[in-house]
Length: 326
Image 1: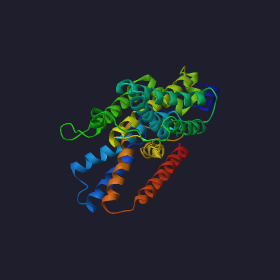
Image 2: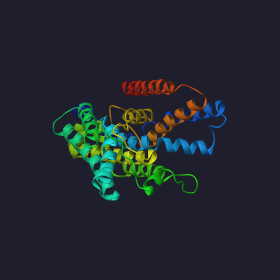
Image 3: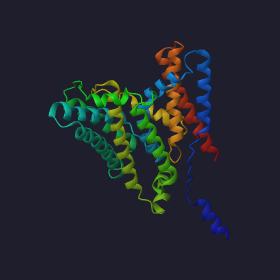
Image 4: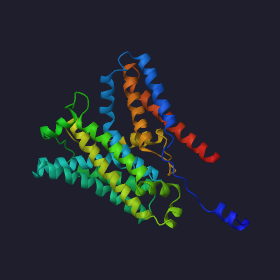
C-alpha cells in the first residue's frame, strides 16, 4: 500500500460498532449493590422483593428501551415522560368521554405517542433542530395537550381486564406488564444484534456522514427511531395507567431523566454509537435496587437522587476518558 493511500485511510472518518455497550462494569456495580443491601436489610434478598423491584421498574424500563435506541443514534429524547401522559390521557379521554371502545382507544393512544415521536424526528432531520431543542419543545406541547382536552382532570374507570394486567401474577410471579417489558428487552436485543437496521443505528451514532456514504438512509432511520420511542412511551403510559388504575396530565414527570440515567449507567455513550439493551436492563435494575434498598435501610428519598446523580456523572466521565484514550 502506498504512503498516500495509508494517509488517506488514516484521515478517513471511522465508526466502531459496539454491541456490548460496556455491560460488565454496570453488572459488577449491580452485584455489589445487591450484596450490600442483602447484608444491611434482612428482607432485601428475597424472591418477593425481586418481584416488587421488577414491577416498580417496568414503566421506566419500557421508556428506557426507546431511549436506548435514540441515544445509540447520538440523540436524546426529553419528551418521553410527557408523551407517556399525553398518550394515556388520549386513551382515557376517548374511552370515558367520547365513548370509543377500549381497544380502539388504546390503539389511538399508542398512535398518538408514535406521532409525537415522528414530529420530533422530523424537526431534527428536516428543520435541523438539535435533538435537545426538538424534544424539549415536544415535551412542553405534549404536556399542554394532555391538560387541554381533559381540563386537567384525572381519568379513571379503566376496564377491569386492563387493571389486572399489573395486578394478576401469572404462575404467582410475574404480571402481564412485566412480562411484556422483558419480551421487549429480548426483541430489541435481537434487533440490535442480528438485524442490519439495528446495526445501522450504531453506524449513525458513530459517524452519521460515514453512515450516509455507506448507503444508510440516516434521516429516515432517525425519524423511525424517534417514532418508535414515542410509541414505547405510549405503551409505558398504558402500563402506568394499569398500575395506578388512573391517569392524570402530570403522570411521568421526571421519568425522562430516569430513563436517560438507566441508559447512561448501563454503559451507553451520550455521544452515540455505543450502548446495549442488556446494559440498559442492568441500569434500570440498579435504579430499582437503589430505590428498594435505600427504602429498606431507612435512607431518605432524596439520597437516591444524590447517588444516581453521582453515578451518571461518573459514567459520563468514564466514557469521556475512554474516548480520549482511543
